[in-house]
Length: 341
Image (cartoon, rainbow, N blue to C red; front, top):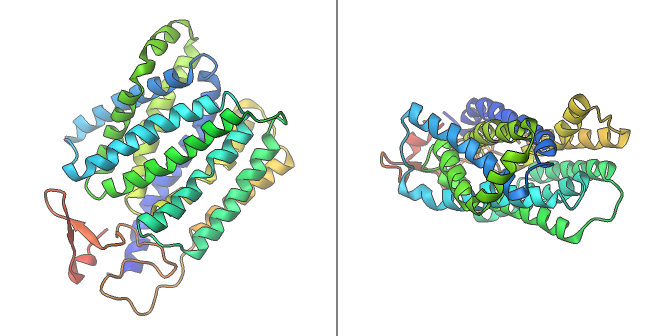
């Protein structure tokens, strides 16, 4: 089986999983507005992570998946502390100091960092269509941000916190990607969530006191954030990430601003301005461009795992490595490469 055929076979499930992720992540912004009125940034992050960890640990028991292999722990630990823990606290805190439009513009630097460092550190390359699509999507995110900005002066600490969120988001994903060569998506997500919850334990006193004061609707929104945008969406993200590159997955998240506009319109009655709709459309166009594939290279060397546009065939790492029975990486021979999914 050629890499091109293999990519087509694996792309459907990965796209479906990515679609579930971006829809649930978009819905999180609506829920955060309610829960964030009665829970502090750290308390909200901890409550969300504890709810998600409970669901994920139950899934681990049902599927009888044990601890991840030793080789996965470094990536899981880094993504757990930075992405599950640091990102959520920084974003919750930053959005208290700047309006949602400014926050979305700054946080959307994350996918660009993901593509740049993924191409450099993970050897994913710099496909022209991916970079062009991300440029268009980022422009769309800026348009959405400007059109929904409150017009007041942005707080420098708030902008810096949103920038911290963008960096921790990108580094967390780049750390999780190699870990998925050893661990299953469920293992990577569950233990990353647990580590993030442990990192947020200093906010446990605040969480306990605020649960008693917050209305039931805010607490239910916090639980919703843990079960769906965290437990489910981070699992489908890890599944999709295990089958494609970090850069392409980062580009897919530019669908989120467009979905947030639509969901806010339907759920909160916030009618978007024409400029907001135009920005959302740009985000979608950019994602579509970034997902385009070039024609496969006619001459493929022994390490063929890269599509004609420079992106990796789904399920094939840049260094063409597979896993042994104990989870350690090993080179694949030419016949084995054809069977990698």
